[in-house]
Length: 104
Image (tube, rainbow, N blue to C red; front, side, top):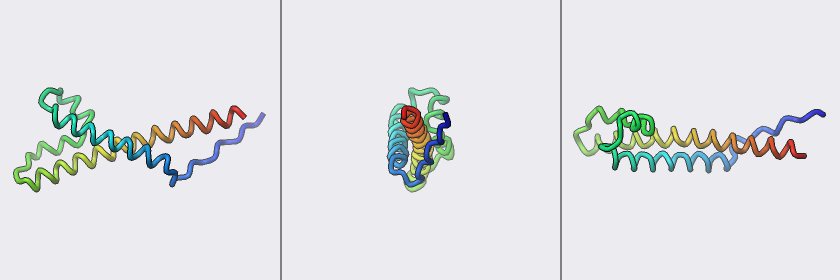
C-alpha cells in the first residue's frame, strides 16, 4: 500500500495567522505580567519568558527613551511567541492532515 504525501500547507493559510496572533498576544500578556511582578521573579525566569528585557539594562532616562525600550522589548516578545505559536499551529495542522489522510 502506497501512501501519498499530504498536500503542502498554503503559506497564506489564515489558520497559521491566527496561531501567530494568538501566540503573540500570549507574549504581550507575559510582558505585562512580568513587568508587574518583576521584583518577585528570579532573573533567570524573567530572561526565559521575556528575552527582550535585557535591553532595559540600558537604563533609559527620558520618557521617549523608556517608551522606545518598552516597545522594542514588547515587539520582540510578540515575534518570539508568535513564531512559536505559528510553529505549534503548523504541527497541529500537519498532524490533523496526516491522521485524516491515514484514516482513509
